Amino acid sequence: MCMDAKINFDSNAAYRQKKVFDMQDWTQEDPRDRQAARADLNYIGLDGTIGCLVNGAGLAMATMDIIKLHGGTPANFLDVGGGATAHQVTEAFKLITSDRKVQAILVNIFGGIMRCDVIAQGIIMAVRDLDLKIPIVVRLQGTRVDDAKALIAASPLKILACDDLDEAAKMVVKLSEIVTLAKEAQVDISFQLPI
Image 1 (cartoon, helix red, strand yellow):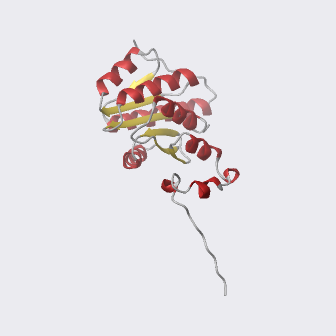
Image 2 (cartoon, rainbow, N blue to C red):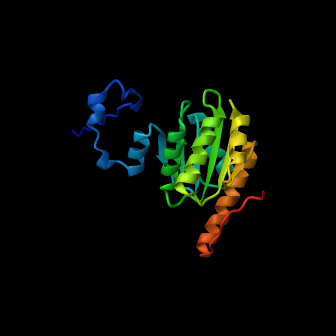
Image 3 (cartoon, rainbow, N blue to C red):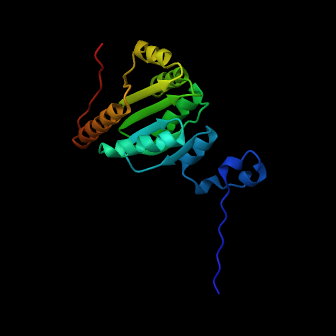
């Protein structure tokens, strides 16, 4: 007779089961998983070239689907949740850009509980602090979206805003392809937005 047993712990219960979760051996985990856990982010690394920063698991899956629909491949599943801070958004960008395969980033936020202006502040802080050199497409809808758009427009940073998810996905897929081709040809490129 052969027997086997496996036990999984629901990470949503971590706050109730501190002793159990303190036993986790982080050396057996991907360093990005550990980084995501410290920042209280839901992250799963994938094999694609387009980094995704989204709020809500359902919207994250829909975002990955629409990227695939337009011929791109998502590099991650990253859900910042409904109460993300500007600091968490910066940590999310650190996490996404730690993957060398990422050639472009799509931020897709539907601000119900989440305020779009907080996300915009986090994006601006991350782009500035991390000196990001890859294209970033941002789609924001919902609470305080006009404030968020004003913050992004007023910043001197190269952040492409797009209101339509389908258009945002097409844009990020094309930008990812351009960056990938340039790197393969060993051509240095820089992105400039018209003023």
